[in-house]
Length: 336
Ligand SMILES: *[C@@H]1O[C@H](CO)[C@@H](O)[C@H](O)[C@H]1NC(C)=O
Ligand SMILES: *[C@@H]1O[C@H](CO)[C@@H](O)[C@H](O)[C@H]1NC(C)=O
Image 1: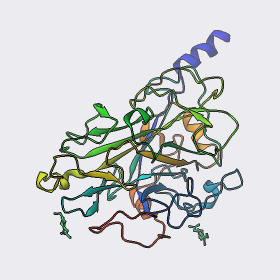
Image 2 (image 1 turned 90 degrees about the vertical axis):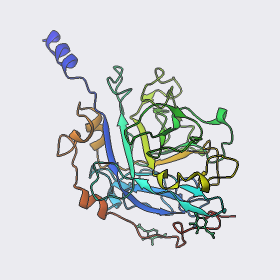
Image 3 (image 1 turned 90 degrees about the horizontal axis):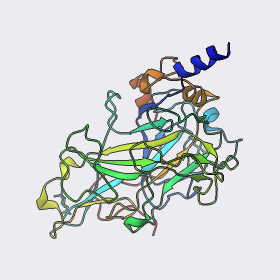
């Protein structure tokens, strides 16, 4: 029997990788993780996922957003997590700002914006014989920092791709592309995947996690260290910013520098960051990571429940902060 179960283990490794679209539930100045209770928060975010997102989302297992949310804008209908990043603005030569639209995941019909989310194993091809442990209820983390001002300060896994076509991958940079990109700019956020096994969060929202990410290409550098021994799913966001309507060089700065700026005022791109609050129902994420399904084929009950584009696009939240983030603005919305 022993050789038989070994053979089974070899033919049925758990290699699941999730890749799915989520549409935007809100664009506003809220940040329940870094600035809980601040209405408004310092800068504008684009948020996808469950509708339990709010100015305050206390941590701890008693606040299980998988139980309090009633809809999600993500493909997998058991995923009530929230995922958010800053938003990108174009600064025209006359000094005014316009928010850059987002290109939705191509599988989300009828959706005008949103992100593509990944939960992979050690890399796309194997789990490195390590068990991948799903995040527990109440878990949250951030990657990157709005305070980063130098290239050397950019953590591994955060990058940009200047899209030649919508399918361009690779050629990642730590700074905003310096030339006009024919199909937009993809912002990539790879989160750390090694957990200390104890803390759902930490004061800086980062030190309970450790990154072995080498690049932004889903290749892990090595095993998790003893301080952070638990390997969790490799979470990553891709956001495609449709910069194409701002490619007219006569509207770029007169010195020829690139015109895009994050909502916190960063023109270099180094201050890119992402935020995550876990909210998968029950053991659904663990079941997915223990299987060998790939991408959206993990839906339709094999093993995850999924929903159609109409249901995805219907899930929105009412803004808490009422201000214009979308018109031609004389300054970036920010809490001075
Ligand atoms: C957000 O929190 C406020 C109280 O701070 C509450 O009144 C409101 O219902 C909450 N919204 C959601 C969507 O839970
Ligand atoms: C600034 O430039 C943009 C882009 O050309 C234009 O749409 C906008 O109306 C201008 N705003 C002002 C106040 O001139």
